[in-house]
Length: 114
Picture 1 (cartoon, rainbow, N blue to C red):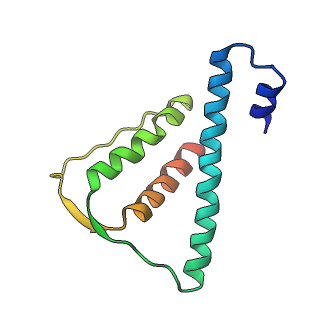
Picture 2 (tube, one colour):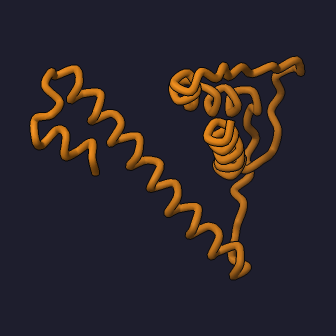
């Protein structure tokens, strides 16, 4: 809320500052959306109505996507994220949305509590 007020009250003076604040607002709205979806998923899980949508996908591609998503946040906290992948890139059968959710939660918690 404070970031949007800074834009509305012209506290952010330059276009660059306004753009940066808008980007933060956007990122936070995505985070809030994920939290709501995670709560809905938890309710489904507790109710026994949780389905997995498995498909063949690359674990390396998924992990690169998650690491890339957190690089900016990690740098702000002086944390270096690196994917150390030594295995051959193969396709596996898994629910990419659920695995991304798990990896996102793990990395997010690790950054926040480091």
